[in-house]
Length: 266
Image (tube, helix red, strand yellow):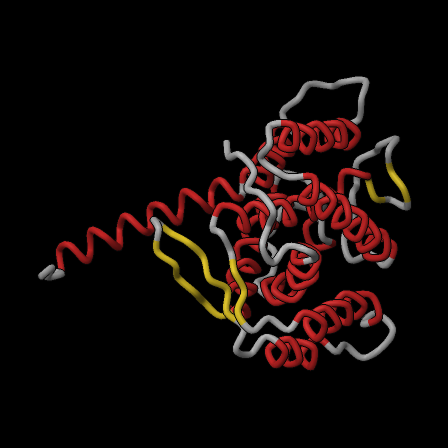
């Protein structure tokens, strides 16, 4: 009879936490590489190619590298490309309305938005796709179409709240309602753990807020209050990212509830 002592339980917990952290780091490989490239680009000497344009090339090469190395499948790349386009549309509207800006010059720039801006959303999509493989994610009681409908309304509200009443809180309540009872299970060291899907959105939103602080500090973009010098991004953005991640998640689940094959891992 196996008796679990407090010491053995703590040791097992530490092993699981280490494995979980390592898998999360691998899932974030694209985002880490992208943010590292943005940070490194600030230290480059003056070049004929604008920094924003150089980051477009870097983002494309990064995506191709992950695909060619087998770390992401063709379907993953399709999801990443879709999120890139959706992100660019989002950026075009928000920059036009003055929510934030890309102050540096570039050739590959449309409406004040450099094309590399979409890669920031691609990084989020890459994380979701790689987490799906690395953690063998499975959904229980997932309401596909209601969740997709609320996610679409959330995306639209990020635009319309500039002219219409902001429906952020009602939409957050709707998201909680359609995901009530939905759990996402994941594998760590051979054991399956689970958590509410809504909680996973909140946790991802928190870490995206941390990444946003790093990105703005590196000059990836600037909010109006950061134009005269960097200041932290308001914690309220955690809520915005928590809602926005639902859009990426819905796209990532299309035809994926059981992936046909697992990509190789770096």
